[in-house]
Amino acid sequence: MEPALLIILMKISGLVGSVFTAYKLFQEVFLNKKPRLRDEYKFAKDFLNDIAAVEQRHPYLIEKGYAAISGKESLTAKEIIYLLSQPWPSLSLRQYAAARRYVMFDEDKNRIDYVGKNIDKNKRKCSKIINLIWYYSFFTLALLPLFFASDLFNKPLILIFSSTFTTLAFLYLIEYNKIKKGEQLVERQQLLGK
Image 1 (cartoon, rainbow, N blue to C red):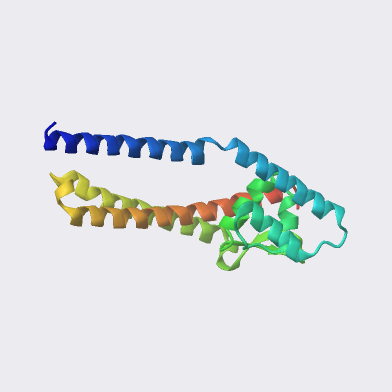
Image 2 (cartoon, helix red, strand yellow; image 1 turned 180 degrees about the vertical axis):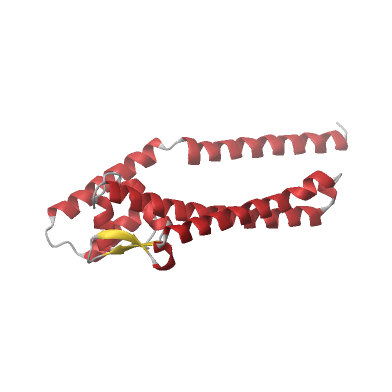
């Protein structure tokens, strides 16, 4: 067998092995969610039973239980208890954690309110519009080289330029979504009369 053919066969077998490994990893992480969801359910059930069973539950345990479920340690025990009392606790916890810059839990009123300049609806609307304008501007800048460059893969500078502006565009889109999630959380709370 010729050395060139042997090298080609080795490269092909390496490629097939890599593709197979990537597929199995993808399948294990993304497609095989049932066991992970069962474990999360059992832990959440035990965690909620512990909260309900103990009259004087220690805030540390509540915060650590939430951190174990969500992987985040950003909420206080009072915030967690309040959000768990909402009709959609999982959604409320995710939205509140994402929108912390725009909303906060008011312990005196026992509800979630807007923070600082976000109290004014017009300022929130203006912030959302500005974030969308920046998003569309940066995304357009990221796409411009794709329309005007003839051979992108030979021009790493164009790829760096595009990826930088794509990243900036998505950062503004994420910020827009945070404002939106905060608004949804407060509106849902107001509809329920809390």
